[in-house]
Image (tube, rainbow, N blue to C red; front, side):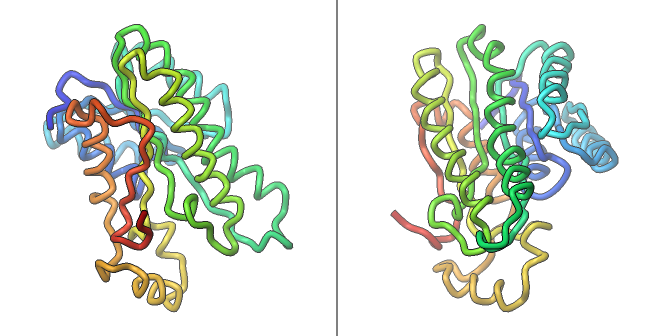
Length: 247
């Protein structure tokens, strides 16, 4: 699967799944614009991509700020001429039972995980429409499909991302633009490392493959959906969860 000549923008790229996506897209030949809050980690990622013979640029961003999204997308298009592939990966958690959840934590998770995807998609759409080719890939979650106690805000944001995926797929399909979601299960990232050992052990028992997934395994799915091999797939949710949720 070659992505030579393509330009990708990845949000939340400084660590975890976003970082793995940026590396795998670059390895497949894409030029990668990496965006996240941590400028130091972004710089290290760009250096790693360039050391491997790829091309990349870093764009510090807070995806809860609409003007920053607009300026970063505009800057990336100005630098590389277009954006072919958008990976909406930026995401956070603010876990609490609904009874005790503060509205500020509800809104911050929805703004970061869902609203930013809508805004980023809106900003790159003109570039994709102009060239009549595009790939929009939203990183959802298994918990957007099955829910999770203590994560009502996170589950709602990821379920919303799945609905957004399908709506966009219907809107832009006639222009040769696809929009799909990847729904990871239990993946070894900084976000999941903060969970208790008991939770992790119980989670693994629910996974038929008997192990936690890796960010690279999610990234391989993203590269596939970004490629011409997935040209007839749109509005789809690709489960990367080791069998934890089927059907």
